[in-house]
Image (cartoon, rainbow, N blue to C red; front, side, top):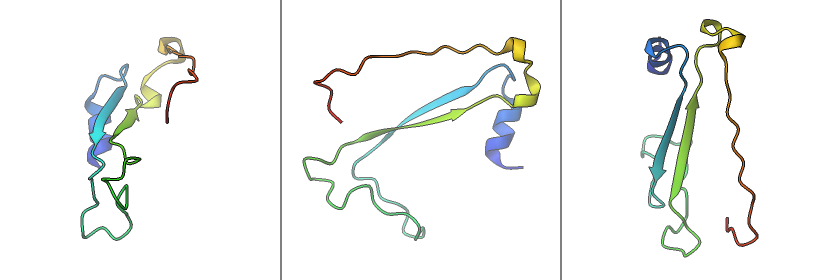
Length: 84
């Protein structure tokens, strides 16, 4: 069993998990991993930005009845001044 699956099985079946993690604009893949590339060719470029990564781990589906599921949906309007 993989670590990710094991972690899901020991967590309370009614709870999910949200992981937020910073990613530096200077972050580079491990040298042994040939399938990945650096985020930016030049991390000192003014357009290069630090990022926030997100991972969501939902509870195992078979352990929750549909009546126990609750979702909260939040929305925020996009301002014209917001930059991407």
